[in-house]
Length: 202
Ligand SMILES: [Zn+2]
Image (cartoon, rainbow, N blue to C red; front, side, top):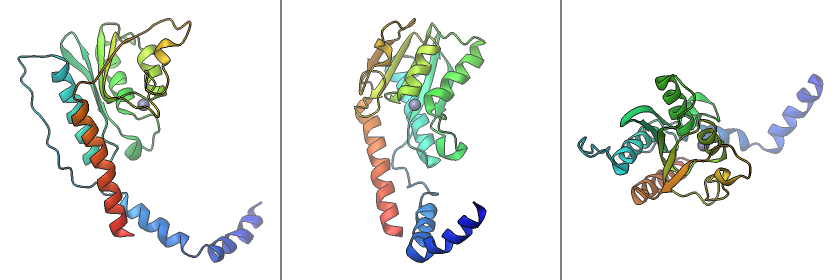
């Protein structure tokens, strides 16, 4: 097997001579985040409504952007307090499960000292994927509120609905739409600026 690899490797380089520099170039461009044109927001502490908590999730999404991660942020609220927060860290941690919601739920469980989050609400800037939708149900969250629906991969009604799976032993209250325009603009701008940056450097 080892000798086969030695035999084939030079052939690959010979047949695809441009593949090596191209891969190097793409790797280099992906290491730098495009400059974030959006500012964090500082809502009044006097009115702790859904917009207040979603604004804090939005700020977490900006943290993700600045770390060159897809800008998605999440907050877990329990009894009026922030017990968990997180932003996407898939790239830096090289962990496909390091989504904002997973990190925020784990932190909330540690803060509360219980894996059951029955009285807690998860605020997240984009509809959770199937993994995070499952985590929301497994942690028995009372409510999930997301800003932007995801018709491709959303697990709470966008593409399919984990929350309505027959026989499931817990369901969450699902709400959406708070800060939808702002969170959509953040995501779309990130991908547009990344594409422009990559095109310039190839
Ligand atoms: Zn997810």
